[in-house]
Image (cartoon, rainbow, N blue to C red; front, side, top):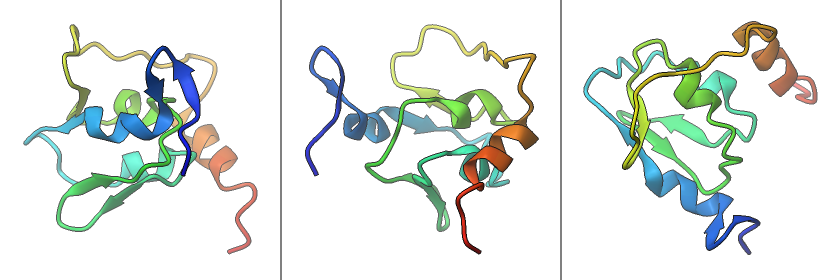
Length: 98
């Protein structure tokens, strides 16, 4: 897959290697349900594929604050007050046939 450029020398496909999942992770699955790219799986550990859209919904909506980006300067998270996690999940699933 050819990387889609998002910035100088960065592609969406490089983001999975930038995530850190710390020991606060309880594998609740919120990250999976809010990921619009269906880029995250849990198979004993949280794993990221190469389809990251760099929306950081997984990071900002993690209830344990267990997801981070390497070299992140702050662990503060931002939630859009006008959009709920339920709305994000519904939007992610609007094209699913299942």
